[in-house]
Image 1 (cartoon, one colour):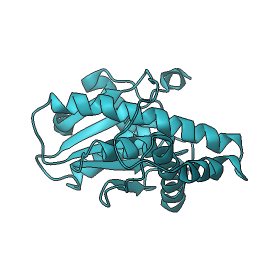
Image 2 (cartoon, one colour):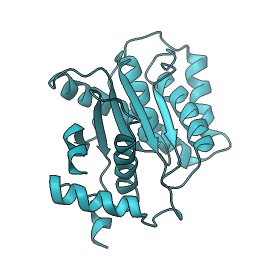
Image 3 (cartoon, one colour):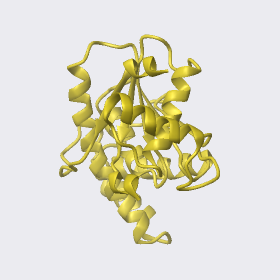
Image 4 (cartoon, one colour):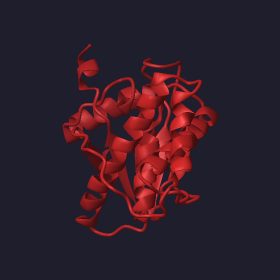
Length: 217
């Protein structure tokens, strides 16, 4: 099974940089105000924080785009990322869309919520993030793929797959996964590779969102 890891690029984003400008159609003041209102009216501060998170992760998409350009070409790149509050998922989606990365597929692996909630929250966050960045460009139709197949018995409860993924990446790559988010994300990525859901010749990327301290609890 270790041969699966030959396909994998592991990316850890530890530094969140300030949001820069984006190219695209400029949002009107009315559209910008409407986007901000999605998170400030009726849903509270938590949703506003998610919007800020998504806007920051747009910058992270630029960073990984530079890394991918330095690697051998691949027909498609499948980025597996945890999707719960969906701020990271949405920010990466807007970023890759504005960068014109039609070869990227973002697989959001849920540790707790169903795909219907992921898709709705992500759509709202993408609209708000795009407006804050000054663009109204639509996302590519094939960019976002979400799955809730790796939740297991619930949030924070390890599964057989997440336990195996944690052991495998620690033993072969020296990469620590946290049991709540990245372990289940990695479990989904490995399962897709083994079931040939990702075509041969494509690239797999595991987006590691941190959470190291919980690995030692």
